[in-house]
Image (tube, rainbow, N blue to C red; front, side):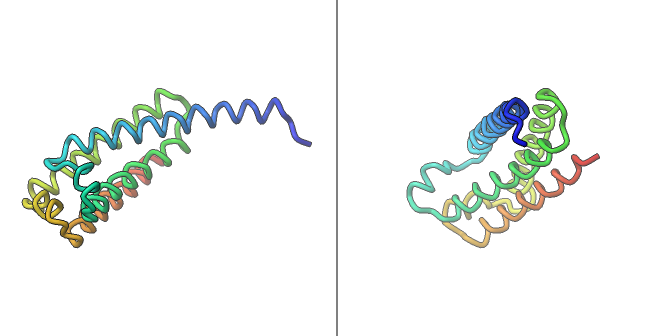
Length: 137
């Protein structure tokens, strides 16, 4: 039998969790974009697929640990802490890739280098998977 009160309680938790996750994803996307030396919005508007691929990988790479955090946390504060940690890890890792591993990554993305964008996206997604798995203490 369908219990309306039970459903409404669950739906409220869903709306809060989903809303916070969307908020954190939006904030991460903004922080990630201001942390890069190129303007993703302008590059994507100019039909630069490399910028879209790299940014898309970063978004997925952050969404993965967010999803994991949603499944293992018991409070909004704990979820927020995991989201913050995951975001910092993703942004720092992207910085390390751009500064130490592929030093001309920014130029490559600006020039539309798809191979470099795939590498960047794969790094973000791979790190996000490891980040998510590490949250399952």
